[in-house]
Image (cartoon, rainbow, N blue to C red):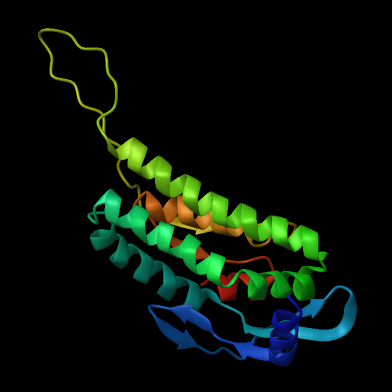
Amino acid sequence: MKSAIEKVSSELGKSYPLIINNKYVETSDKLKSYNPCNKTQVVGVFSKAGIKEADAAMQNALQSFESWKFVASEKRAQYVFDVAEIMREKKFELLAWLIHEVGKSWAEADGEVAEAIDFCEFYAREMLRLSAPQPLTKLETEINELSYIPLGVVVVIPPWNFTLAIMAGMTMAAVVTGNTVLLKPSSDAPTIAYKFM
């Protein structure tokens, strides 16, 4: 944990662009994230999206949805299981970002990272369950089938208080069910969302 805190401390104050269509987009309008325990310490400097950037992100999400919705649910679930595994590997680094950006204690940060991993595992397992044949009332004269379908683009705007757990849960629930996501993290804690990405 101490080495993770040292690593994160050396990265404080970095600038982060928007990510739209797998490209980094810089804007002149910036947002600074501050450590609430040391209000002079800048955690990160972020490009802010305006109407132009939001529209470009929406258009890309709509376009990506047209292929993502056809990816097999088992494959989407595996991607989310992979995210959970990566988070386990980077656990201490994520803890250190939470400590710096939202002032969590070590124990609180550990609980939040564990909850974020649990959300990924839960939603991936639920996708596997829900994509299997569902129990229905059978009638002799009917052939019934129930299947869940993706709906489109989801906008995720998580709160500041569980900035990793709620953000990861909302995002992965949408992604694993075949939707695409526009993620607008809390203005009080954008760094952890960027690290999650």
